[in-house]
Length: 346
Image (cartoon, rainbow, N blue to C red; front, side, top):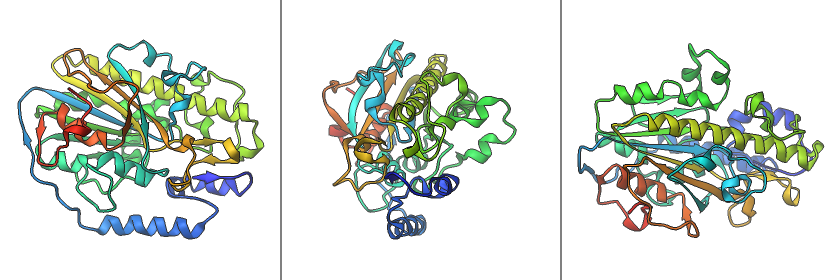
């Protein structure tokens, strides 16, 4: 969503689950057309990719964490002056790459992360492709806006919260609950896990993290972002990055405990976010006109000690399409659709 100062924020915030990933609120025609385009895509037959082959029986886990509205310039891993990544900055085998989103709203951004190339066609996306080719695939989400997912183990926010107890059930760390048990219960050697977060989606950034993560104060407590000072707004957003740091570091610690697996975690955001620069808020400006704040995203990779090495250096800029081919390489999936130039691993 992109907003300028003013507007009926409270109505938009109340309906953000339906509008949040799609809207450019100054144009309800655009909003409506995007909504029905998405609905028509759900009924469109997916174009299957060529069959794939699993090359070895080495036990491997790839975890893809899809960020929501996370812009790289507010990560201390990318040089931000405030310490928003106190935990990740201490983890070994962690690499942060510059990356550019191919879209500025969730439905297109998630599709781009999951597809083998940027296209308007509905090709088979990564989780569906691997599930069809005998990889264990688990999708857990507190968000929405993904292309049609055709797998057995799909868990949305309602299903995750069922019988869940504790403060974490109200926030994105719910995505980690029971994850180790699900991995260990699998009888397959290759596992893909996708965790689709909603941590940094506005306008109510201050509601996206537990109070103990409010490291930066004062914060914006209003959905009327124009009523907050720049410091309050950025502090609230930065606290969502601190919480993201905790979730990712907790996930990595969980993966470290699975000694029998080669493990990899990849965090890629769907798009960035405007926080008042040029009087713009949130996201959704067409890519051709979008400011860098809505396009520059984090691409963070961690690997277990016994895993592969990376071939790119930190000065190179990756795309969201690097995800598909890199996951295939990491899991030793041989496919005619595989593009070595889009693989980040040696």
